Figure (cartoon, each protein chain N blue to C red):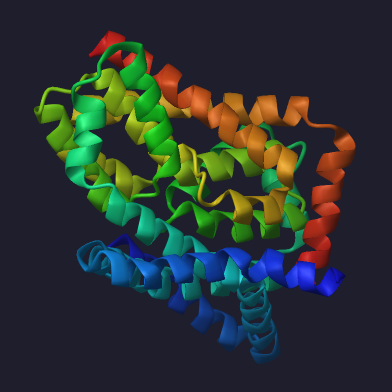
Length: 158
Length: 182
């Protein structure tokens, strides 16, 4: 749904742009294409790696990791698994719901969901291309710690 | 030798993952099928999102004047810039890898570094469609508390990144953005 809104807005802006100036619009499209080609190989690589990793991590595996192990080890596993996997939200949330219903703690689930969204081990090569090695590693490390902190706070509140 | 190394760096991982997938087809056809299905669905998402993101990138670059960006998200934009960075990131669609090219255009146009980091943080976790999805799957209390914590944590991460990174490194990013988006 949100994808189509994005496409709609883009089309609208593109039409307005074309009305205002054809040259500028063509220039904009050229720039966009160039930026895309710049990272096309990396994008395809990421999709392949994610697909392969995903095929090995079934729902059962993840719920086993997060469900039975509670305590510090469970939180650690939640953070690590969340960081490595790059699961789309529409898969991740129902999965988290199932694991929660299977008896996992709120801390583990919140840590897992947060790490999943904020930390991206698989996309690190791409992020480095834009922000350099040091910043990328620092951002992901900070996000990793933040996921655990968020998880612990949520475990205390809920 | 150097050019060979360059190609290995660019295509090495791609070839390796392709080879893994092909080998997987011979070793474990079921897992390979699961993998190919998820790869296909990811490509579908990419086909939907990627053109829009890069067209938007081009349009921002051509139409948004540097002064406007500096005024609203630049070094002196204060809380206004922070809020705008949050909103831009939260209204986004698509995986995090879409945020990086857009962030680079914002950098090029003179947005403040910490605001860029807030934009990326917001894109990663406070996206509105994802929040709605999270609420319906894990409960609204869960989603709301996590959103609240994210709103606190994201600016802290951005601030720490800005304060602990040397000025020269940040300036280099701006120069790199200028070059890349020419």
